[in-house]
Length: 193
Image (tube, rainbow, N blue to C red; front, side):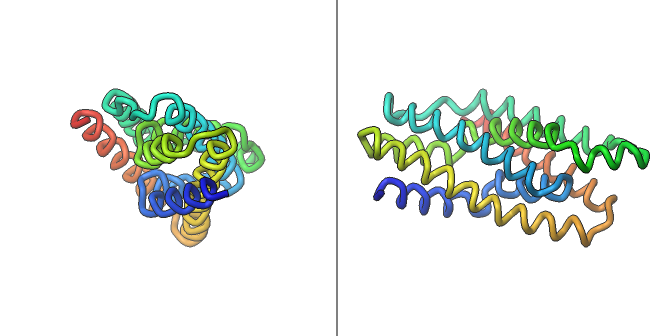
């Protein structure tokens, strides 16, 4: 239980103001809240499971440079895609409201890439390296996953509120700028790692 509580608290605090929390807010302005939350949860669960396994087996960090570089390129691609935009007719718009698979996949892949080598992943690796035994490692995984999803859930709520109050054009340019900023930050991180 100690491993669960400490992991939840550490990762929740580490995620506040992190780029992935800002990404959650950005995605929530473009997609419905549930698909965003599902994508984040799936990606976080996978990354943190790998982090716990890595921490338990090696107790060492991953080389983050190449991973950050690839994630940076992906985010710049998301920015360009967002700027290009897509025009939907009424029938397609109605279908899009009910199509959650593509939103879950887009959010999940983006979060998975963004979290590889991120401070929350490295914190989870460190927590796992400090806690031995299957029960403690399960606590680290569950606590870190829930802590991150809780912090990102707050960002989703804010993003949904902004999405209802801002014009679509502002959301489009804001989301593209957000993705571009994340991409540049990840590229810089990749070069300096």
